[in-house]
Amino acid sequence: MIRGFFLSLGQLGDPPVLRVFAKSMAVTLLVFAALGLLMWLGAKAIFAAWLGSDQAGIAAAVALFLTILAVWILFRAVAIAVVGIFADDVVAAVEARHYPASLATARPVPFARSLAMGLRSAFRVLLVNLLMVPVYIGLLVTGVGTAAAFFVVNGWLLGRDLGDMVAARHMDAAAMRGWRATTRASRFVLGLANTALFVVPILNIAAPVLGAAMATHFYHGTRAAVRARGTS
Image (cartoon, rainbow, N blue to C red; front, side):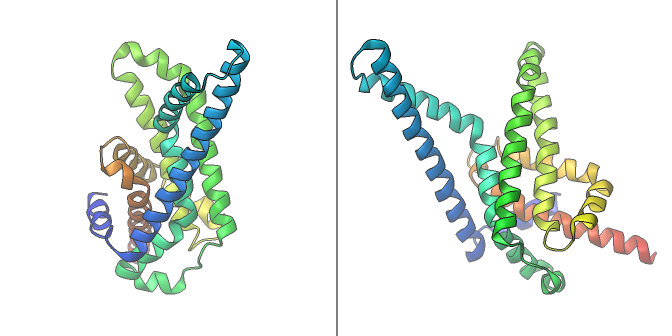
C-alpha cells in the first residue's frame, strides 16, 4: 500500500492524470456552485415568505453557511462519484507506465457504465453515512469513537468502489464478484488508506485521483499474488 501511494503520488504530474484531476475538480466545483445557487434561491423564498419582504442579505448568509456545510459533508461522496466517471483514464495511465501487458488486454469502461458506477458510489456513501449519523453522535462521548466508526464505514465503502474502478477493465461481473470475495480484507485496508487522504489538508484535494491510481497498483498486486500462488 505504501509503495502504491508513492508511485501514485509520483504520477500526479502526468498529463492524462492532470487532465482527469482538472476535469473532476471543475465538475465538482460546478456541482457545489449549482447547489449553492439552489440554496440561495430557496433561502430567499423562505425568508421572503416569513418576513413578508425580500431579505436577500439574510438569505445569502444562510445559503453560504449551508453551502459550506454541504461541501464539508458531501465533498468526498461527490468527488469520488465525479472522478469515477473519468477514472478509466487514470487507470490507463498507471497501467501504461507500470503494467503494459495488462493494458494491452484491458477493455475500456464505457462512459455510461462509469457514470452508473460513480452515481451508485455516491448514493451508497450518502445513504450509509446518513444511516450512521445516530451512531456517530452516540459515539461522540467516547472522544475517538466517532472517528473510528467513520474510518471503518468509509474504508469499507471506498475499498469496494475504488477496486471496482480497476476490476471493471479486466473482469466480467461474475469474476468481479469472486475477486471482491477474496480481497475483502485487503480492499478494506485500501479504503482506510484513502479515507485517511481525505482528512489530510492539501492531499484531500487530490485524494480521489490518488485513490484511483492506488487502486490500480492494488488490483494488479493482488492479481500478481494469485498468479504466484498458482505457480508455486
